[in-house]
Amino acid sequence: MNIKVGTSSRKTLSFFSLITLILFMTVAPLSTSAHPYSASYTDLKITEEKTEMTFIIDTQSIIEMIDGVDSNKDGKLETSELDENGHHLDELVDESLALDKGAFELTPTLEKMELIDKDNKQFLKFTFTFEGFLPGDTIVLTDGFYVSDENTNYINLVTAAYGDQTTETVLQGNERSWTMLFAEEQIPQGEGDVSTPAPVHKPSSPWFSFLKLGMFHILTGYDHLLFLIALLLRKQTLKQYIGIVTAFTIAHSITLSLSVLDIVNLPSLFVESVIALSIVYVALENIFRKKIQHRWGITFAFGLIHGLGFADLLKEMALPKSHLAIALVSFNVGIEVIQLAIVMICLPILFYLHKQKNSLKMIQFISALIVIAGAYFLTNQLFF
Image 1 (cartoon, helix red, strand yellow):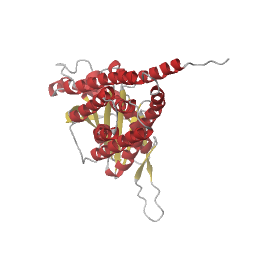
Image 2 (cartoon, rainbow, N blue to C red):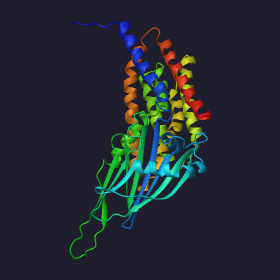
Image 3 (cartoon, rainbow, N blue to C red):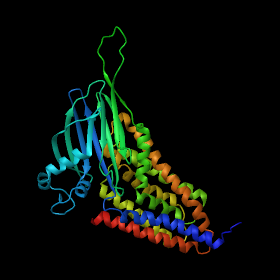
Image 4 (cartoon, one colour):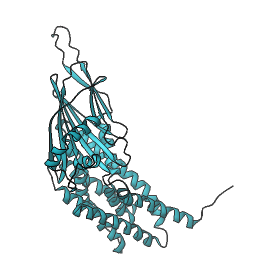
């Protein structure tokens, strides 16, 4: 039996497919917890004598996980609140972050706990010391923060240094354990019997870790995705669409690199506010402009600011120069993979909708939803 779907049904299906995608990006940040994204940074300096671990996490996550720690409820932690809850804070990290030597969990010594500010964001920094590691030892880092919270997208950017060797990895999702084996290098006979420990890490390669991190970052970056969709909504030629995607890619790649290399730095509040404003501006153009031309230009201009927003995570990781190239390239490739996937999903739907008589009204309606979302992001940045 053949089932025919009428033109009206296909049009409705296409329209609601796009509406569903827009609504998800608009409503998802509002319907989840107040803090849907959390990032921490772990730095390990390993020697035979001792291991120093620095763990940095945003204070909003701490406030979320420990009831009553923010006694004055101002959304930040004060030194006095830190002093009052020192035991609870130490206990939280001790229970959620474990460092093992082989099958045995090591006991940490808390050396220091302090509040630090970076780009208008507050973080809590813990410094712990553990015993050292010898050739033949295996170090295992396990992160249990937010492990059972499906509403919070959490990542831990890990950097480990042993002598002049450094490695990075990303712990997120179900991959919460990182392992390194300190193997003895084989010394040819006649050159002495001194062996040097060399780290051999077992998890996925740094390239793949940063690729996934880039994909994860753009997937949870609803503001970036809404901006991209707003750019595509109005009817344009295939050449214009290619120009838009290319301009956005080149622009954010430039500033992402310059920001991570610490060549260009702008305040986080300014960057995030302009990103929100870019969503509103493009969506309003969709509603009120009769003809859309040369959109690649405005895309490039705003894309430069979006690139600074993409750079936040990598900047916080303080990557060594020897690892910057692979991190930047793979992180950016991850962003592009998701960006192109979104374009490939949206364009067939849009090409069909643009053939309908009332396509402009449909696009204007969707753009109005995007204006509301962008206005929410902007208000949240400026006043909350």
